[in-house]
Length: 503
Image 1: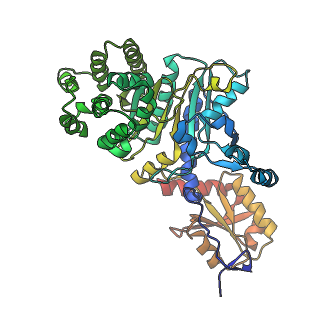
Image 2: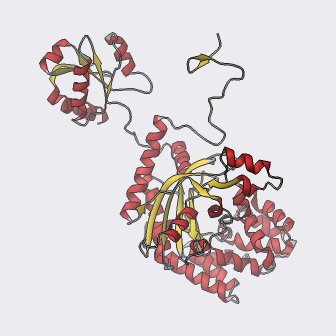
């Protein structure tokens, strides 16, 4: 006999029960882990004075388009008009994408925040908000990469002070520290420093955007791959090699990294990129100090570049007073693909994940794109899914409470009395499930120990227990049993058994 669905025999092709590619179902164990991480995120963000907001899953396409760059726009999920409007649009000889869809699923939480700040003038001057919600991208799924995923965003609007960058980075670092991460690094860069290096490499200003897009792929396709793409995008071989030598200069602090072999191959690199290695041998300074000093020497003729390097030095100094301080690493190759960044950019990385755990930066022009007023802003987004992937691989999750601590089993008694007893136990702080059907005690106890339930204790109610206002408690693992425990004392006994088992 064929399988049935909803009580009817299936007809024709079977309907898949799997979620769409890049989407997932979350079962109880998954939810427990997600809530554990989100709980710590909320707790830390609250301590830093950030307040929560939420925005709709669906935004107007006019809100979303043009904020993420050409490649980002291609990943937007567009929602077709409702049936009657769509039918009229399809009947039009001049049908366009705009006539088919005018709304989309949000791509991130930053653009919706910018819309909110532009819309609500009564928000505090320095608006510190956090937001934990799902976003959607029509991307290719991979390790830690999904089409629907949660971001945990923390942002400050209304100030250009580097204190805002420091607070955002510190909050993210404290979250990761409390989750148990000990080996992450906070990578810093600046959009204007990238532009200065592009200028120093002799790249035409018109190719700046293309160069940034290619550099952003370093961690995916490597030095030679990026060099090839830079040339395909219009850079000369010499400029492409020069640019890569610059943006990867911090790798020269670690002998044997790929940049050494790459530099050796480029006969055109006669401008002294290897000087950073010599400099590092004589400096007993943090990595960011060495890299900043080297870049300042190299770009000393570019006033904008020198000003940006001074800004990064100050930011590193401020971060040294926060939990993020020991994690800071200057990373000139960091590009952050989203086009709305205007200043400092940052990313959090761990060794065993090919992509970042978190990322963000300053975006002073984004609110103004909504046409009302200019509002500077900076923020960081923690990727919940990627954090969960690494924590699971490393076994970082503590034992998390979930499911019932007690299963109420019953024999030949009024079900109303069973529910009343369960309510009394819950009132004493015990997680309680009631066996819903009349069954033999052996079957009920077997269910208590089954996968997905695993209640460590059974509370058994028979006619004698109901009459006495009591319950019989049975510890399923040890077999220990205590009869006639008054309901008023049962919670204390149960908690004692549970504490003893954990101790």
